[in-house]
Image (cartoon, rainbow, N blue to C red; front, side, top):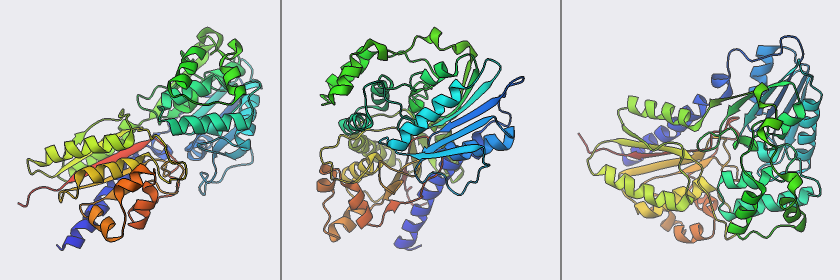
Length: 429
């Protein structure tokens, strides 16, 4: 096989493992065969998140005609899925909320508030819901919410920290949707996009009690030295925005089920890699670090494992962070991870890798992520690209676009966060 042929084979293997990972956590595979319904009353369905469309489609197919159905997803994440007239569809902004996000949250609260004790609310949650359904606290406007979201996203804060702040600026997050549903029984099915799979963090936990406080939110803001609009600072100081007590939410009538998680995607990819004869190292789904730094550390690990000459795959998930110093740069956490990895590998002839967001969108760009190969830095030099400069400028997207190494899938209609795989070539037999 030629060198070019070998690279094509590696490219196909990387992409194949990513596709297997995504399929393993898609709604058609993970939604329960039987969904909880009201026995004596009405059933309402609310689906919020990047996987909302296929989750709603499966729910409608398995339940029939609900009393009400609301679907909220990111612009462009409906796919070609058709719905009956009972389903109200709202496409909203992500990762920064827009005017449609406010409408979506108000509609969700209205559907919940219309339920009675004998009714049931089925909530279908997936990643992205925090921005897609935004109900600002009193005195906080849309522009204020957008400003604080952008500041948090650029700060390098973890998703847990970001959601802590958002919960205390909201009328729907942190269990408040369950509060609106009152005595109705609530069942929440979750495709988790957060490390650790804590239901309180997925879409900021609209039906899950929140154990964080206003003081925690203020400490996060102070820790990252965020400059916030006056209305946001005032809201974070107002006791009325404290998280509702768990016993106020009627949680005895709430059931929460995580039906898909990042570890499921990693397990599927690891099983497939092992079937291909690779020795697999699964680093787990809870990795959180600055993206470029994780790339550097994974380069050291890959080189160490490569020393024994075996063909290997290293898989990992989680949600890295990016500290943005150049707002004009284009990129995402998976692209910065890969660029940090490539620089540290320095053209190691044995090692290739892929890093993608399982929702098909890395950050705000149109790519899921990218791939690197032993010749990545050489091709970059030939094209006049300086990888260190692109990394320093948060501009990894343009680097990989110029090399034609982006992975473009379009919306995958699921979301369990980052998927990374490093392939190490074995010694010739």
